[in-house]
Structure formats: structure tokens, C-alpha cells
Amino acid sequence: SKYGELYRKDNVVLSGTHTHSGPAGYLQYTLYLITGKGLIQSSLNAIVNGIMKSIDIAHQNMKRGRIFINRGLVEHSQINRSPFSYQQNPESERIRYSSNTDKEMVLLKMVDLKGEDIGLLSWFAIHPVSMNYSNHLVTSDNVGYASYLLEEEKNKGLLPGQGSYVAAIAAANEGDVSPNTKGPHCINTGESCDNPHSYCPIGGAQMCVTTGPGLNMFDSTRILGQKLYEKAKELSMTAFQEIEGPIFSAHHWVNMSDVTVQLNSTHTGKTCKPALGYSFAAGTIDGTGFFNFTQGSLEGTPFWDGVRDFLLTSPSNETQECHKPKPILIPTGELSKPYPWHADIVDIQIITIGSLAIVAAPGEFTTMSGRRLREAEFESHGVQGMNVIVAGLCNVYTHYITTYEEYQAQRYEAASTIYGPHTLSAYIQLFRAVAKSIAKKTVHDLLKGPEPPLFNISNTNLLPKVFDLTPLNKSFGDVLQDVQLQYRGVSISSMTDHTFLTVEKYDNSSGNWQVLYNDASWETRFHWKKGVLGRSTARIEWYIPQTAEPGVYKIQYFGHYKPLLGQVNSFNGTSSVFEIVRL
Image (cartoon, rainbow, N blue to C red):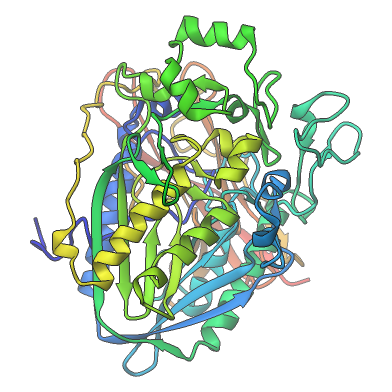
């Protein structure tokens, strides 16, 4: 409404930089509503308003500039977490690559006409699961820490999220890529579990996990984020190949559960109604699943089939046949109450800037899937030398996309390829058609396709009613455990526009308190515990960096409480002042 037809469905891509440690409750399909405890309106509002505000800020600060592209390898930062699936791909294809993961980071550097840096946007294939599933803190993980370091360096003296320089490290074809580089091992015995089923002799699949390079998940996040930061900084400093030319965009919707795929000159295939296989419930070596499910399951069991049929529904013969060899655990495409369980209508979108093509991939493509998609786009239409980027997790979430060969192994990623064995071929065919419309300048002939439905899910909040009380003889904002009076320097409603905490230093010259850190700072951690009978507590941790200046400090907490009857109220709590002294 503010900018008219300037920003449209065809030229705006919603692309998640990705984290496994964020608030839930903002997707409309039933599977996500169940796992996210319904629609959490505050989560949805924060995300929508934050995106809108970011576009508005960018528009208000728009200036003429130039874009440069660069590429470089990031070593020792990832492993393939399903190597036995990758091995199913033809040897003639595998020998073309030196690794079973894509190690290349692609980076766009944006500068103004004076050559001053404005920001960068890069893509790299890595799962943001350095923070494992035991973590309850909101965090942007390894890629977010890299972005944090890049912005901190350019926006000196400003808090996270402030300043004009913006850096993002976005998702590429990371579907089968793990940052936990120590490899799969049995946590109870220490022996390797690098086998097709990720299974331990004692304890089964739930004992088979992999960990990162650090001493703990925070250390692993820091190590890998530092690697990504250093490579992005290097590529930005050495980016001299300019991207020039016109901007084009194309978008349409497709019913992914009903695509006929031309496999070759004589054979066709079809996509399927969405369904999740048994190995979906097994999880991965980054985060194991439930009960006795294992990766690589090619057959169901009478017990779990019975549970599925009793609680949900039995998959139709057509769906079972379509998904073979996947044994179906949840036939999401045949479940519609209270709303459809998975999306059928999916965005197919490409944006080009001169010789650069950004393919907005609506899911998590595995390493080889992404490679095939990149190669398929423009060269078949006589356009040579295009820089094709597979930007993962765009517009709508459709789980994973494996190759046809990887699908046969039915590990987690294949069991989560929801439209069946020909999903990748369908996407290649659909994106190729959009690429052709751009190359031939026939975007106006592209059919809009069926629009996705928008459900009224406002009444699906599954969280219990909330109210807050204080302990006896306490008030909201009271400090339960105060700071020490002195520390020595060490050697190592909506809060959308606010912060839960600040670390502040007293400025002797002005007589004011200066905010140095907030809840987005890497050096701080904010823990909230629900407690019982509404008596919650908050704990703030500040890991004092080596660069902390001596002086007088305090920590503040900003929160909200809701009485049993009445409206939400804000409050704050403040620690005693304390001092940082030099060693």
C-alpha cells in the first residue's frame, strides 16, 4: 500500500538465512502448527513487521551503487551427513567433483559510487546446527555469528542491528551438509557409527550423533562463524568482477503435487501428494529422532502403520505407489483437518542481474541436487557464462529435495522429500521454463498459476493461558542474584524494536550511561525460566570480552508481565553497579 507496484511477488524473494534456534508458530500448515504449538501471533507479527520495516529502511536509504562478485573455498567447515546417499549418484557424475559437499562461498559486494562499502550478500552450503537440539536460546547460529562479526567491524561502536552496513550469509544447497565436523560416533561407546543406518550396536540410532570442532556448542558456533567471517571478509576485499546489466524477475505458482515430468524422450514421471517417510522420524546425526526409527528404512512396521492409521489415516494405494520406495509414515497430502498438513502450491521464482541468476529454491536441496539445478538453468537456452546461485529456503518451506538416486536410499533427507522421487526433476523442469522466459524475454507470457490459499488460523494457539506472579515480598524487576562489586578483565508485547537486556558503562565526561551490549550481542545470554504458578525468573549472563574498558557498569533487564486479570505491563530491573578493572 505504501509503494504501489514497486515491490511485487515477482521481484521480492523471502529467503531465510536459516537457524534451528528461532521462535515458531508462524506457518499456516497443520504439521507446523502442531510442532510449533499453533499460531503464535507475537512471533508472526515480529517476523512480518520486521521484514516490512527492513524493506522500508532499505528503500529510504537507497542509493546508486555497483555490485561485485567473488568466489572462494571454505575448508574444514562441513561434512556430508548422508554420504551413503550421495554415493548412490552415478560415478560419472561424482568424479567431476572433489568433494561430497560444496565448499564454495559465493559473495556479492555492494558499494556506492564513491567505492564505500554498503554491504554484502553471500551464499554457502552449511546447516546452522552448531547449536544443537539441547539449546533453548534464540540464536542465528554459525552463519548469524559470521554476519554479526562482519557488521560489528563495519558499524564500529554501534549495537547489533544498527548502522548502515548489512551483511548476510544465506543458505545454499545445504540439505545434506553438517557443520559438526567430528563425524558420527556413538555417544555411549565412542565408536564410529558411519554406516547406512547411522546405527550404534548399543542404544541404536539415538546414540549416533556428530559434534562440532569446539569444546561445546557455543565454541563450535564461534569457530565456524569465525571461519565464515574470515572468508567473507577476504572475498569482499578482493571482489573485482563487476555485475552489470539489466534486472529481470519472473515468478509463478505451481501445484507441486501434480507435475508431469518429461524424464527423457520416451518416458514421463509424476510428482506425488506430499508425504513423509519413516526415516523422517529418525532425524539426522545432527539431531536424532524418536523411538526405534532409523535412517535408510525401506519398509514400514505393522505397529507404526497401525498407530498412523488409528491417529491419522492410511495412505491411499496411489500415494504409496507414487512414493516408492518410501514407506509412508505421515500421508500429509491426504490430511486436511483442521487445515492441509503440507503446501501443494509452491513458488517458482528467478531474479537476474546481468550475468547473475538467483534461483529462489523453496526448500533444502542436497549437494548434488543443487549442482544439477545450477547446471540446468540457462545454458540450455543459449545463455552462456551465467553465475547461477541456488538460494535455499525461499518463499515457502517444502522440506528437502534429493536426487532420484539418493531418494532410493531413504535416509532422512529422502524421507523428507515430500513430493516423491521425481521432485528434483520437476523443479529442474519448472525452473528451466522460468529461465527460458527470462532469456527469451517472454516473462509476460508466463502463467500466474494457482494462488496458494490463506487460512484463518487465528484461533489455533495451543499455548496455555499465561499469567505472571512474583515470589513473596518481591516485585517485578527485583534482582534475585546481583552482580559482584568488581570483575577482572578476562582473556577470552513485542520486543521487535527493543531488547531484553543492556550492559551499560558509565561515561564520566557526560555523566550518562552508555549502552554497549544488548540481547543480540554474542557476549550476552538471556535465559528465561517459566517456573510454577506464574513465578518466572530471568538470568542474564555477560561474558566479559578482553576488549572491555575498565570502568563502572550495570546490567538492566526489560520485560513484561501479565496479571491474572488485566493487561500486559512493562517493567525493568537493574543490577547494582560494578567495576571492571585491569589485570
